[in-house]
Image 1: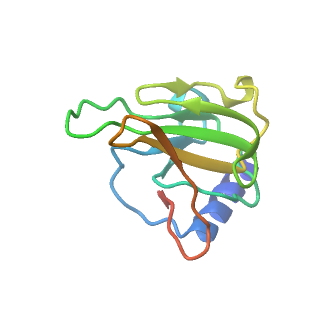
Image 2: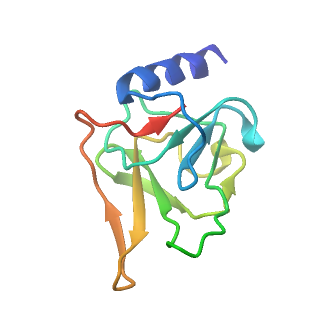
Length: 134
């Protein structure tokens, strides 16, 4: 539990996390399995998490909004959107991250549907940007 708190604190400092209301189109990283414990909302792509993060569970809220297509998220074991990965869409959860096949999350990529219907995954550098709300 101490390690999770330390990693959360490091992530907060590294990415400029601010206290805010939950984000409707965010990826939610929980400290505990089955969506328990404190959480961090990620609302943009993150090319490098240092140190890597190992959440208890991961969810994307179910969106009932016809105005825009909800994004889906790709989680990568290595930085710069590389290595083993998995995708998670709106309304889905990975209830126990240790059973996901990934060992850690080192980068996160937000993917959206473009006007032409094609999926576009967004890559962002970490310098000078805020990615999370806590």
